[in-house]
Image 1 (cartoon, rainbow, N blue to C red):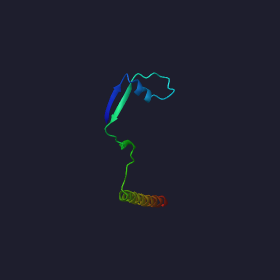
Image 2: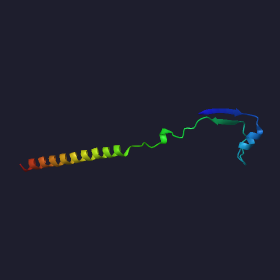
Image 3: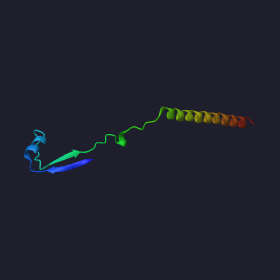
Image 4: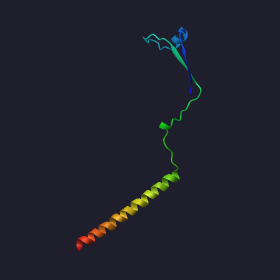
Length: 85
């Protein structure tokens, strides 16, 4: 957020802003006045989770894995029993 102003015909300002040994011939200067700066761009901020929420999600995942493993064991037992008959 801010404004930009084009400055032409200010040789002193242009000379101050030009890098030494730069071969191009500048035509104008653009001066920016920054009114506000937002360094918290959400694109680059990692999402934060509360430890309790993470623990609850992991516990739920572990319960789900345990239930699925029990279901697999049960199904293996049923198919094994059916194969013997």
